[in-house]
Length: 298
Image (cartoon, rainbow, N blue to C red):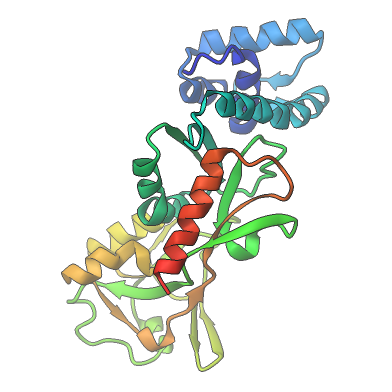
């Protein structure tokens, strides 16, 4: 846990975001008791309860909602001011906090973030991965990373690379007789993704502006592309995944793709941040690296 002197406030924001005292304690490097005492002490100082607590759930009170909405950007500003004061002239340093999804984080780590950390060892990159979209300003993030169409209109958007190609893959033995059209998949065993609402996602295909969606059959539904890849490698069926997840498997021949002429292109990922807000040196350096990669890729 970094010694910022702001532990009670960081504790409140972590509990509010994770809806769990134990998960928040793990994230901050505190014991659950120490974190609970920090929150209770702040509640006593404020003279109001910030959380409803039961043995099974944690939720914000009305006062907690108001307090955390005001606290998150204020605390982020304090961290930025501290990091700016500590940084050597022209040298990015301090913490860069980015909200993203797990899949987007993995792709970005492979394409730009690992290189960014090698170039700027004094930066601490704090990636918070979750499925839901959040208000990055209200929750104290420096930036977000999501598929480009999901970026709010009032944000500066910096795209990472190009569209993501979606491929159907399976073991070579399963594709010894490849499907000729997407409709042939209705006679195959497929590994399906789960939508946020719980239903299995349909498989989408595009050819010459014709778009086709199929509710393919299959005995496995998963909510993680990494798990779907593992299932495909185990021979449990065909999987439809962004090509990035299976790139190395395709090169090595562990998996093969099919119906490539019908492959859909997903929108590119984009880093985004508020217009007109102070940008810490680390964020400016990351944006510069993304632009550098874009120029090199042309």
